[in-house]
Image (cartoon, rainbow, N blue to C red):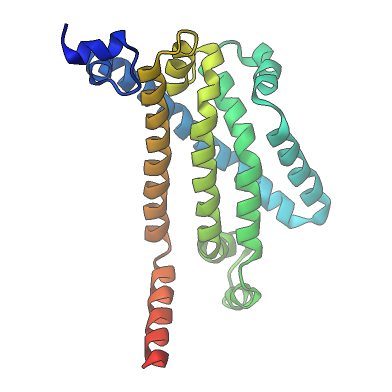
Length: 236
């Protein structure tokens, strides 16, 4: 028997034969994981943005909005899926909805923090130039709030990648399905491969979103370059 095949028999943690023979299974699970994560974060952002605007509008709304999203985040995942089960059945929509609800506390707070951090002088200057509320939001406040917003998206994405594995309880957990299937027999190679892929997905997603953030906020790089130049000049 070949050495590569022996690692399956001896149940080694690192097994090239497992990767070779189960490559399609790993690919399918990874694609499902990415799809569920991406859809959940996008929908979460679409829901969180108006909630953050509502919370910013009045303290009367801020308390309930922030309180509700915080409470949702504290609900255990198994309990959350059980509560949503009558509405969505054993479907991907069940997992996506649960992940959207979990993402709201991070996204709403970061969007709100970013909008509230916009300098008052910038808003007053825009109003003086005839900017209405909608134009002020999209052309002044939102761009200046982008670093905080993108930080929230990055955190929510990494968190969602981890939480997606819980969907394995209904067979919609991406790489979590492989981990769940491997645990009863403690199939080491499958547990390790799926776990490493989850970590890699989180790292790659965070780096990609960081790149998007840099593209959307070029002025932050210019500001950092000026700060470095000033530091060098003072040192000289």
